[in-house]
Image (cartoon, rainbow, N blue to C red; front, side, top):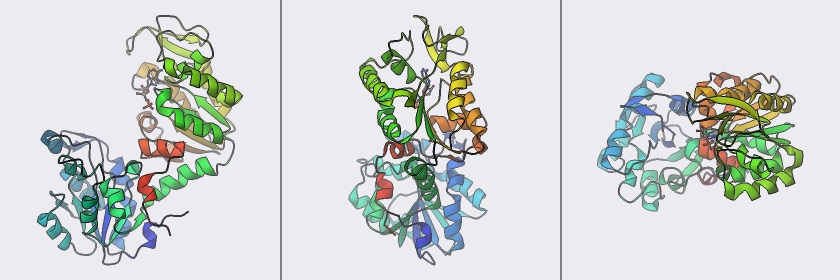
Length: 396
Ligand code: AMP
């Protein structure tokens, strides 16, 4: 089942509506990381070069009040995009109505218009986020064809993705195409051995992805806060570490079913407080002291994980190995990032969200085959869940 891509559309002289993900971090109206804007440039440039009139839609943050609106105004993004493209980018302060329609009508071929934050439409009854059919139809009426290039929101059915595609010929953009290619091949046709590394805070958030990857991967390494529920399931004491008591049974079951496919830490760094100033010690998982909290994987664990990863031909990583935001507990995550960056003959894929942030924070960005731009979307994809924003796009 192949979806149309932007190459399959006739865009010459057409008004092309594009859903992009410009949900960038901002501080006091300044963009602090423009990766998501840069990631959309291939599609936008292609459309400009092919004489389209380009109308961009994106959300930014969540809009629940007038204050949120002021904070999440997309105007600075239009300016930044203009600088990246080296050409003027018009901006519509309205998400509907005559001013927007006039701005679209005024576009010449090869010109670009960015529409104000689609979630401004959420203030009056969640019209964008609940995929209000009238809104999707209205936005679709502004253009000739639709391109969805916002991978980060493909796991949501909103008016600006699913709603528009229900009313227009539609295709995925280059970014969505790339994300689906890398994530899809890694889970569905992996070059083996496939090793999955799962970390992060909670088992409950990642049950589906653990279950799904256990059926597909040759090994599944579990680190981060999640590991303690599994260690508890093995009968070990975990002190004050993150523990989901109501998931211990499930962890037991998964351990039984998976056998040696599941790899857990053998040592951890424990702390007497959740702080960079805490006292710490590295202990075997059999000796976690009662009053202490496991906040990182230890060196023996990293050695073990490296051994498992040594022969991997495909690696999927989602979730940090410890509390990487605190320098003292970033060694485990750093160790895994370093090990992966040294695998010369493997496809290495980082799911978005915290693991992507960790890789970037630690300076390993260029060392991976693919770093996903969508946290929730890539997690859903790895779980085997259909992404509604992709599902809604026309088949070739
Ligand atoms: P997630 O969003 O589920 O991927 O979780 C990411 C968060 O898990 C990060 O903020 C980490 O600080 C946190 N985390 C990782 N390991 C631990 C741990 N051992 N204890 C508490 N939190 C952790």
